[in-house]
Amino acid sequence: MAARKRKKQGDGATVKADEPKIPSESAAEKEAQKTELDAKIKASKVAELKEMHLTPLPLVITVLICSGALWIFALRDFIATGRVIGGAMDEAMQAMIRDIIRGQEGDQ
Image (cartoon, rainbow, N blue to C red; front, side):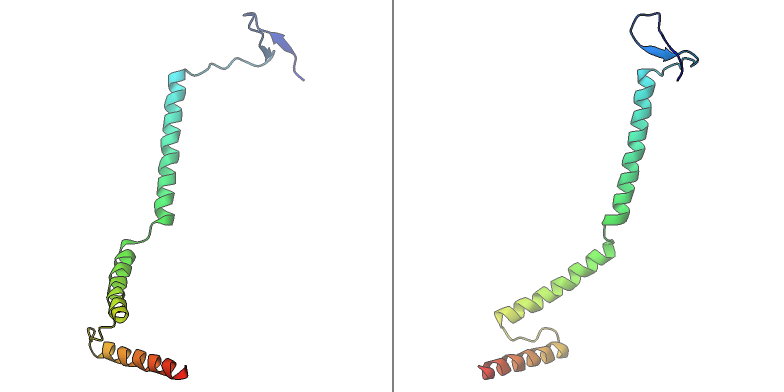
């Protein structure tokens, strides 16, 4: 263990005898370095968040368009207007649903 000696300033702190004193940086330099590191960390976190958690815009638009069209068909079926609004495929779907419902009514 290295020998320690008292500083002559009388502040009570001790230093190693063979260790040269390192000049300390000023408070302004430390604050500037801290601000720079904080900005780098924040930028990397924002980039990681954008990369990992945000969905692609074309996917969002596609889901909204498709769910809107399905919402219209669901309301039409819920209100039971019976109008064909989607062409031949919609008419076939209505006939299938009607047969399923009639089959369930016959079972009871």
